[in-house]
Length: 80
Image (cartoon, rainbow, N blue to C red; front, top):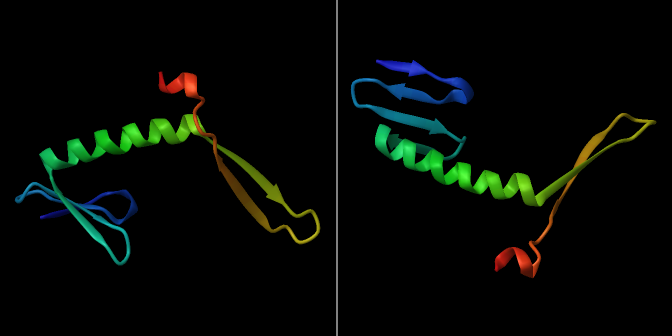
């Protein structure tokens, strides 16, 4: 039985598989692999959240909105 999850993901309960549909790509994980994947993504997200700054801009005349992102490289001190 497929159990729907947010963002189009599903759980195949009998096979214990999580499927994440990314459009042209589908990622399938066993429950154990999913935990490892989430840990990896969490580590990457921690760096992303701490080193990427976002600035949003909205045009006052037409209302078009756009975001700009900057990766702030760590200083040499942060490596040591």
